[in-house]
Amino acid sequence: MIGWPSVEELPVGRVHRGMRVGPWTVDVLCDRPPAGMELLSGEVLRLAEDLASLSRGLDAGTIRMAALAPSGRPLATIDGEAAPFAVSISHVRGLIGAAVSDVAWIGLDIVDPADAGRSLDVWFTPDELALLPDDHGLLRAMLWAAKEAAYKAARLDTEFRPRTVTIESLSPRAFEWVASDGRTRVHGDGSFGAAARHVIAVAATANRRSGDAGVTVGSCAREPVSCS
Image 1 (cartoon, rainbow, N blue to C red):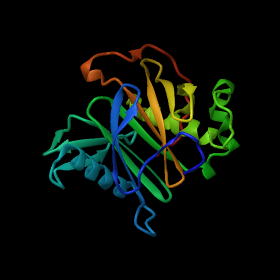
Image 2 (image 1 turned 30 degrees about the vertical axis):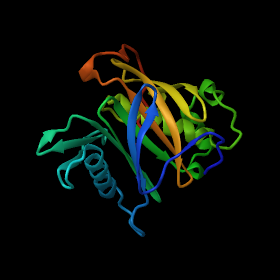
Image 3 (image 1 turned 90 degrees about the horizontal axis):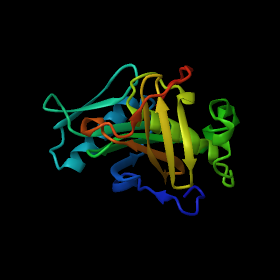
């Protein structure tokens, strides 16, 4: 545990099924990468393939993942055709993670609280920093994870610009967010968990293939930052 009184602890190495994110459910799998491995991008794509296969009851090797440019968003395929579910991945030193859902567009992010210091404050508004007392020293890790997860769920396929994602509410278990690329404005929900002393954020929004709920018009600033 990392100190929250009510946070959901996610198992490492086992699928966590049916995590509630707003009105949606998401399957999540976190694991430790092989010892000494430095290049985690391939390993986390394999983890996403394993999760998607397990969640859908498919044979290993049926699902393949590829990363789309410029966002790095993973695309799942089944026998060469786009899969009818959303996948998100994240990795940091010591932990990799994947999420899958067929009822929403989703984003997953992992943050080591030790890497989330006050240098990140330039990307947060005063209102965001005031959303939750920093009793456990985790506020910045939570905000950063929430922003990255929301950016991925919004599927705007632009570079990650933290100031174009606004965290509108925040608790130790959940958050609400809005993301924009200047033309499209997407809003959704998010949930927090913990795994191996890392902050896990999962964001979700309505799948626009089923309608336009959650999508409006907005505007954004432009500060490119890399995303994992």
